[in-house]
Image 1 (cartoon, one colour):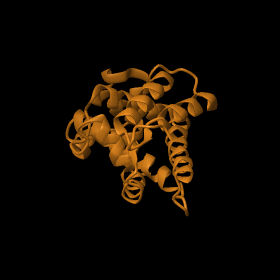
Image 2 (image 1 turned 45 degrees about the horizontal axis):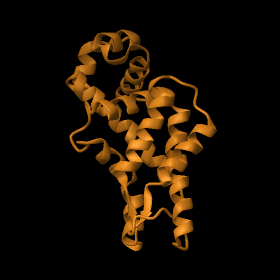
Image 3 (image 1 turned 120 degrees about the vertical axis):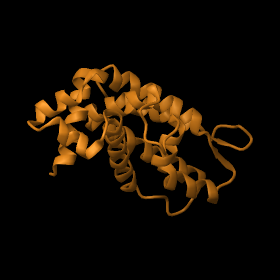
Length: 191
């Protein structure tokens, strides 16, 4: 591993323990390096937090890219595919509770987010963009209500990760079921 990545991972770990009060001094002490080195790589605590958030988004996108799209795009296959995407998303969060807490806190508190992520909806859209975009183009009869999905996803994830509640497969399936209610036909009927 490289030093920059070590700093990001240690920041996420300490954030899990100390929350927003974690300081550059805390991180430097834990890593056995100087605060100057952290400033060299990131400039400010805000930039460091933003870089941690970007790292987590990148890792989530990698996980989502492992999910294969449907060969035949029927509504049933699309719903199954979207469920698999959300399973991958929640699976990542369940496997990485420190990163999950950091991610959920920053999406709920609206910052500090990287400049390209201005809202929670933009975070989820950017993470899922190439996965949802092609489906929306191929199936204009389906409407993907991203705000609904984000509200459910973040609300349920916050229960599990922000409050350090025990994650479970049952809760993940409940989340996915609720999220899939956000995939509706253009007539407003659930599919």
